[in-house]
Length: 310
Image 1 (cartoon, rainbow, N blue to C red):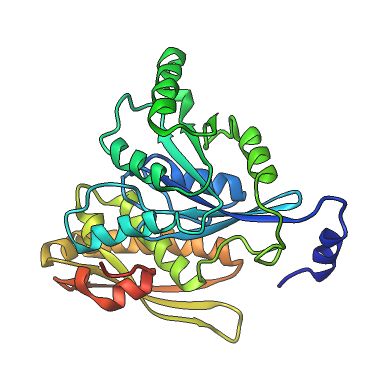
Image 2: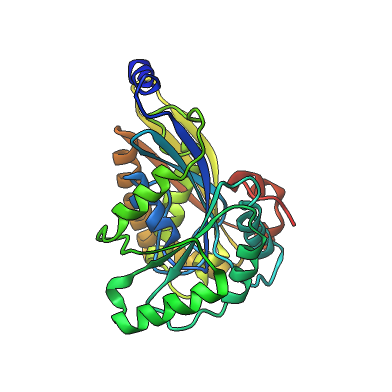
């Protein structure tokens, strides 16, 4: 619920309101979602150490004084091998349309980035200013960091370069100030207390998918998807959620279930606890694993996660 008095107070502040969209792009596992969460001030996007965790574009909504900054978190830029991969990359490139600023995130601890040419090409297409954020600077020797900054200055020609560590918060204050002061003059697009455009139904599915990434190895998380069958608020204030975990093969189903159902119980308990904390109440979560060999071609899955089939 929006606090109308706070909104009215904002409208009468000496500083005029600003609001703009920032397309956050970069290679898989560059730290885009972690940075978006840090800027918003709470978790709005799932994260993991595995690449390509983010599958669709979502908006994190950050407030910096008089400015509302709409951070468009996107899938990593990579060369997709199938229709689903290409749809994810398209969601990232499409975010440039209508953006007021493009923020390229680069993992500074990597000496080379095999997707750098694709990212530079996207930056060249942008019809708005482009800034560069070198993230994970705590893992990078200073000489290597400066060499990387100089190299990317030539390749991307950003208007500004920032050095950050999203986990510790190092370097975020100058970035916040830049975003605050460089959004266009505009009324805010969202209520003051809204932090994301993602529905609770989709967020619940993302939380369960995050647990798959944390607990399963190799390629199995990429071969799975979450379909929310039911999301219902009970009369007692608790929430009942039924989710299907879709996999491509029976052997994958067996791995997710675990011996005696141990793995799916562990995944369910972790997801339930996180959702209870997020929603501020009790959550009844029911997980089912289903083999659906061609889920990557399912129109329902694309609609569920907000992707366009390409």
